[in-house]
Image (cartoon, rainbow, N blue to C red; front, side):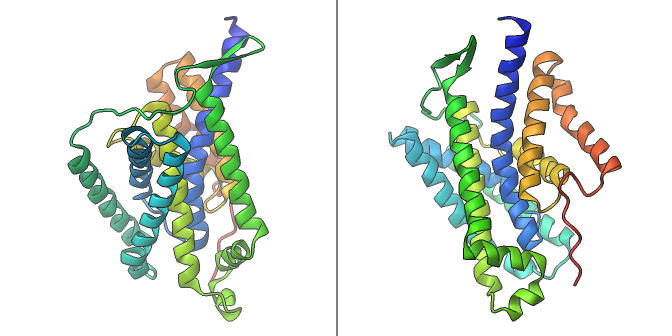
Length: 294
């Protein structure tokens, strides 16, 4: 391939990877925007979502989309359980307590995964198009990448519809702006909290199914997406889902191009260097939300 064709191909691969990261980051951004918590256990929900898709679509032989939906549902339910058993009791505690508690949940879920699947062996998900390619104007693209882009766009559209076009979304946005005013309007915080944790968990499960389909599933797969998602939500603006999507695309493209042209070591560092520059020039991030005052 020519240099231009190679660049465009890597650009498209970076966009597809960035969209997958943006799905994971959108869950974290939703949690922080409405519930004001950074859930580090989200990384293990990504990992368990990948394993759920593996069990359903590979071990049980169901179609990939069935495993994908199962991953979203199971991780959504796990999110509700975490809200009910852990985060509900940490609502008025400092952010450090919440993060330490979620880190403890991260370790517990990781240990459970190791006990169930036994080792660090990578397992592949039977994803459509993984072993085939699509040629478009001289570009040879993995069909699985195109499928993940289509699924991600559908997820973003569904998320936008829920948040900005439904009564549930209006209640979530009202609670994000002012808990006191939302309570006076009759909005039940507990119900909204459970819904938000379900949606965030479902997005984590979706990210795990997508990343697992592209790069295999292993017990440690949740750490890097979690780290990248944290970079993305700070880069895009804490609590901003639009910022998470834009930042995810930027980070994905930057990471993929840097790894391809420079090397994996520099590629791992590049997103953090960009994050430092953004924090110096614009501390609130690209689409930073104003600080909510009580």
